[in-house]
Image 1 (cartoon, one colour):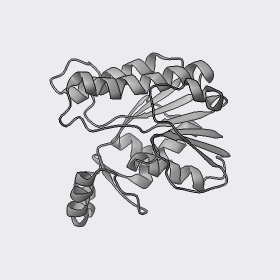
Image 2: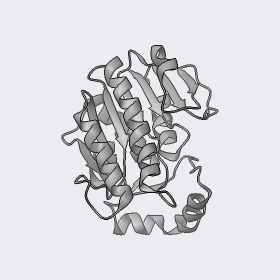
Image 3: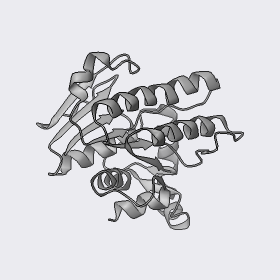
Image 4: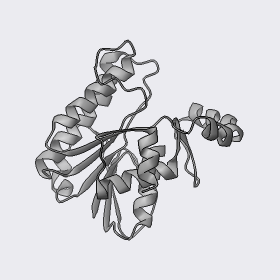
Length: 221
């Protein structure tokens, strides 16, 4: 299986990259992002692309893939809806439309978030934009799945690149076992998330939109 990963330096991207590197059924991995991961492996090639909205210069390198894991994302804090839409919707669709043209019918797994608004009409700005993005992806000629994880527990040395998130994870780490017991359908680990993404890419799933409970079920096989 040939795999593309967009946003492999983020916490979710790190998790699926780790699982792909460990899986003997994955023969080639190409990551695309503004920064390299720094990971070295014989089956890994990294493309550093400063302008993530223009894939023309790398189109020849994006052909012949079985699956794309799209893990790019930013916080909506302090952003206008127009700016957040430009990044969240615009960059995602630029990549997806290019890949749909070059790899018709490929599997495309988009990491969204719990609370995403499929109606595109709710009061929460980020949820509307994510919902619009999901809906647009589901209309493309792709085998698309939307992953909506809730709280994510970092494992295996994976860390968020966002300083404020790292502080939150450090403070809540002692409570996570209790929270996972009390709220099993709202917390997923990076290990579970990476495994679920790879298994859905390989085997499919009965739903196109996977909430946390579905992600955990997929991870368990």
